[in-house]
Amino acid sequence: MNPQAKLIFVTSLLLGTTITISSNHWVMAWTGLEINTLAILPLISKSHHPRAIEAATKYFLVQATASTLVLFSSMTNAWYTGQWDITQLTHPTSSLILTAAISMKLGLVPFHFWFPEVLQGSPIITGLLLSTAMKFPPITLLYMTSLSLNPTLLTTLAILSVALGGWMGLNQTQTRKIMAFSSISHLGWMAIILVYYPKITLLNFYLYAMMTAAVFLTLNSMKVLNLSMLMTAWTKAPSLSTILLLTLLSLAGLPPMTGFLPKWLIIQELTKQDMAPAAIIISLLSLLGLFFYLRLAYCATITLPPHTTNHMKQWHTNKPINPSIAVLTTLSIMLLPISPMLATII
Image (cartoon, rainbow, N blue to C red; front, side, top):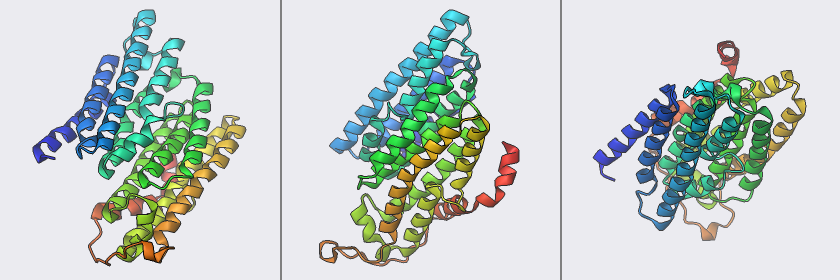
């Protein structure tokens, strides 16, 4: 892609995100979401492969529908209350439509169907943007309207998302699809606590974005697209494979890694809110996710592929590790000891 064009699209992404997260008026928030959608489409379809074009088309249709619903929700609220302010979304029907619209934008169950397909058709770095940066504006809208949302509905969507993200990730062999189902599962954890303690949702999102960025950048450096390629990657880049192992375990939420912190805070807060059954269900369902993270980690660190005749051996290259991967991995593994400080902040 032309560097000037890429610069314009990336700047538009930053602009759209900034407009949405800093706006008070629904129309401004909607404008930011639209700029974001239009800016990411060329980045999805830049390879001109039929699958990339299909992914861009699916993404456009879903996001356009969700944006229409956001506008419809805000107009309904303005019709009944006379308020266009984002924090004044008080009409129950508007809240319901907004929850559906933002769920569609994020990829929460039952509006998750588009996300794995779009991620599979996109380049790895665009996949990283779709999994992290593109989810930030909708999450900020949920954060600002959290007082008006229906807790029962959000809890139901959250448990379904964690369950479906775990189950559907089990039989995948493509790394991008596995990361898509991982994203759906993590969104469930964010949605369940949103009404009760919105700041934990934001903390969870920041930590999730950091860990996911580390995984995607590592996969991009290793040029790994599926599990069979991952099995032969140890001989090519042992240090990156080790980094991938640790980051995946953090993403699974195992102590003493950073990924354990948001799960710990969420379970604690749910218990305080007399929602122990929901906490138990969501904790048990996250074991499904742990299984496929462990499978990925096992494939990444296996020293010899099972069928040596079918796989071409990779040359061992001593390329220096990208500094951003090193920084993100360190943060993804070692932030748990400062959790008391984070807990006082939120």
